[in-house]
Structure formats: structure tokens, C-alpha cells
Image (tube, rainbow, N blue to C red; front, side, top):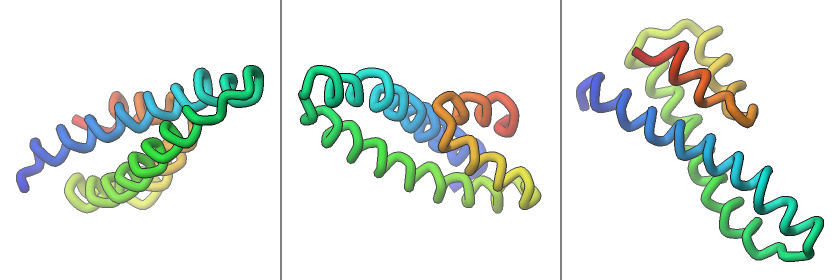
Length: 95
């Protein structure tokens, strides 16, 4: 797969991962703990988990494709656990 297509796919995964995390934190969790409606947490949580794993694998793939150093890879992976982190990664580390 060429570099441009790989970057585009990683950007899509990154955006979806960030959005799913925000939905989980700002919508699903309040519904569960304030209004006792836990069903959305299961759905969004599963989607977010899958996207998180894809993000981490994609980050490693980008590490190899874009010749990042280990510090850049660790920052990109650390950003995956911050609510707006993947948006930062897209702006800072992806061409």
C-alpha cells in the first residue's frame, strides 16, 4: 500500500477513535451513571475498543512508513488515551 493511502486510512481511524471516545465520555457514560441507561456504553465502548486497537496498530504502521523515532511513536500512542489527542496527532505528525 502506498504512503498516501496509508496516511489517509490512519487519519480516518484516528478521527473515528477520537469521536468514539468523546461520545463514550460525554454521552454514554452520563446516560449510564446519571439516568441508569447502560446500553449505549456497551455499544459505543465496543466500537471504541476496536478503533483503539486499530489506532495503536496503525500508529506502529505509520512509525515504520514515516520513519518516526521511538519518541514520536510513544507520543502518538499516548495521545490515544487523551480525549482530543488523536486530533493533535493528525495536525502535528501526519503530512
